[in-house]
Length: 132
Image: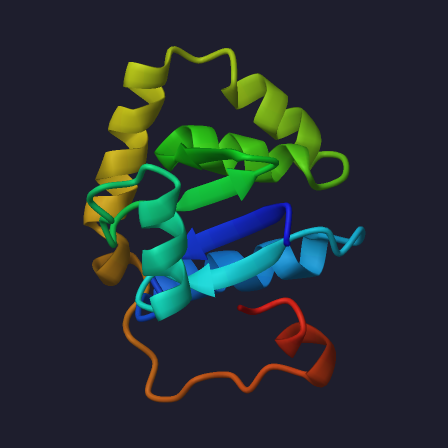
């Protein structure tokens, strides 16, 4: 079983760019990725008490617990190296209702922030091992 899985909107350019960024910064290669639209994600999240899967939400499963929105993003940042780990710890001190307000603003405008791409990037063989 994979211990650290990021679940993201696989049809969102902004979300895919974020995953590309995380992939490049994750030197430990301890993160796995799954599109929220996949059968795996739907089944896995439902089995882990996520009753309503929302495409505008990032979910992060880490060692038996599912985080969402800002908490998920903070936990992912903590898995990366400096300065991202520090940014995660810093964001963690912000009250969650404020942090999630900012998260919701970005999430609700994610399609306008980064337009839909005409084609998808083909993952390398190494990357394919980390995408579920």
